[in-house]
Length: 124
Image (cartoon, rainbow, N blue to C red; front, top):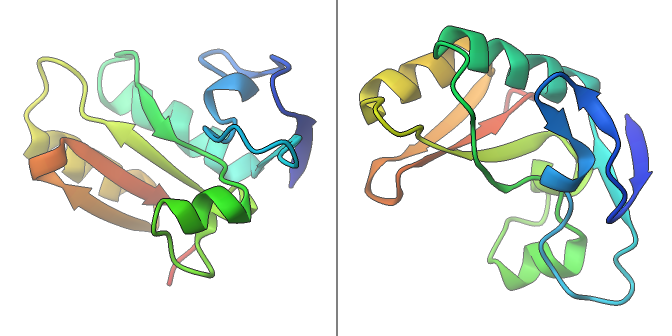
């Protein structure tokens, strides 16, 4: 597990930096971002499978207060830097995107109606 100061851009890989994974809250106590190494590795693998298309992250790390406000589960992997929500890239059918996510991440929840997948590096 890696820990970074929230709001500081640290390049984690060719296509991912910590600001993309920062908690989206404005809580004054939220000052750090947790990131697991496997999450970064699998993110890059997913990009390659999808033809190196840019991926938009809607939620990475969440502080516990923000996770609660979002309706997240108490033991959400977002709070430990082990989960990421990714929008289906433009020009890719959702079914193809969901299948690619499932090929890379051990646990995936596909939300076709909302056009994103919750991807988790830890099996449930």
